[in-house]
Amino acid sequence: MSPGRGVPGGDLQVLGGAVALARSSGRPVSRIAAELGVNHETLRQWIKTAENAERPEALAESTRDAEIAALRKQVRELEMERDILRRAAKYFAGRDELVSRFEFVADHRGAFGVKRLCTVLNLSRSGFYRWLKTAPTRAAKKAADAALTRRIRTVHTESGKTYGAKRITAELRAGGVMVNRKRIERLMRQHSIQGRMLRRRHRTTIPDPTAQAVPDLLRRNFTAPAPDRAWIGDITYLPLAGGSFLYLATVIDVFSRRLLGWSMAGHMRAELVTDALNAAIRTRGGQVDGVIFHSDHGAQHGSKAFADACYSAGIRRSMGAVGTSADNAAAESFFASLKREILPGRHGWPTARAARLAVFRWLGFYNHRRRHATIGYLAPVAFEQRSITLAIAA
Image (cartoon, rainbow, N blue to C red):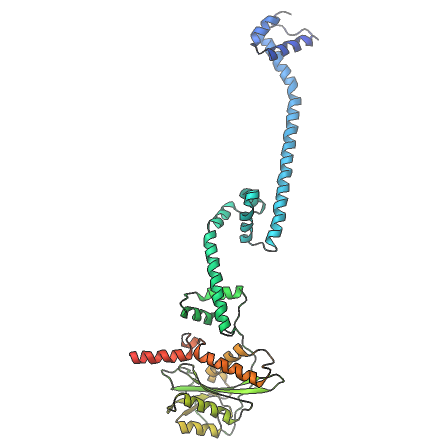
């Protein structure tokens, strides 16, 4: 073999030996080429040719290994995603709100990492971290809502479970808790705390066609500048088991909405309303001259016995239009509140005694504790006492 020439045809052993020697000796290619009598550039080409001959198989094997590793990694990822989704299904328990998904990420980030969890659950990582950052504020708000809910339940229970959001708000504010009514409504709605609703009516106003005409001195103006300027009266029914009724007559001061007198009986004769009127007169110490007494056109308030009782006390009678409940709306509202808050069910009280006791308790509650919207959410007696104090101070 002369320098600079290729390997003689078929002499592959020489080529292989030269390449093996050059690759294994660690010596320079030029020195080995001189020893073999081969041009060093030729030897370099032999080495390159040998490497190219080996590379396709090596590359193919390397590619196969990389593909297998990638597939294994993909399987691991899929198995992990399946595990995440299984745990999430149990964790949500039918919920799928954004908050519950953030909570799941927070609880499982140690096992799976935030990035993977957010990807699987289709969440924003930045959104999750914002949610995590505000966790202390949310916890404090949740604790405050729980404490306020306990107060709401207490007020609701003390009212006989009759108060709605407005009165509960007024009661809490009177106790020094400055709270928004909408927040009270939200918490009551969340915890299924409800006031009493209105019920069906039963007719108790039966006009007497022979009664003397009485003018309307109030004309739906149910306000007064001071106590004992105007009273209102009416009758309502109290249903009992078996279909019978008790009847309640009341006298209320327009100024304070205070219940001044009442009477309860199993009939609707004139003495029912005269008894209530006389009770109101006693409450005011007998000094009621000039008071206006307003009622509807029921036969009891239009009777001669009631007219005589008013005349004897110096009370001026007033009546609204026939068949118009709005002309005695304040009295109607009082009865609506009473029935809404203490009537136990559609069939009424089991006995007359049970009805009397329930009404008696509520009337005391109404005068001394129940907050009334038209007088600034104060109780009637408290409102009168405040007015007296202000008058003295003036």
